[in-house]
Length: 61
Image 1 (cartoon, rainbow, N blue to C red):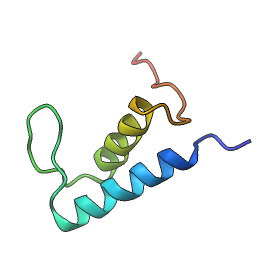
Image 2: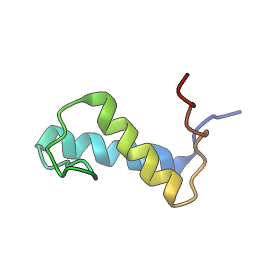
Image 3: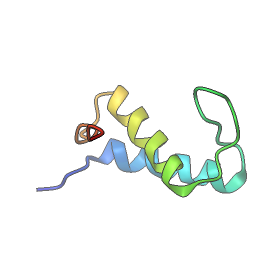
Image 4: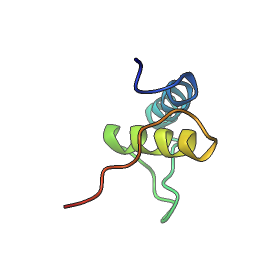
């Protein structure tokens, strides 16, 4: 069974493209995102907000 849905894949792909072009900005501070991990996180959170199939966030220990 796939862990992530199609919507998640599309959102992450879009975020990665924006990061590569230098147009991706973080939600809180509005700073430019350069980290690959952060771009993925932004894509997943957008997909989660729109009801895509994305596993829940891990709780911090």
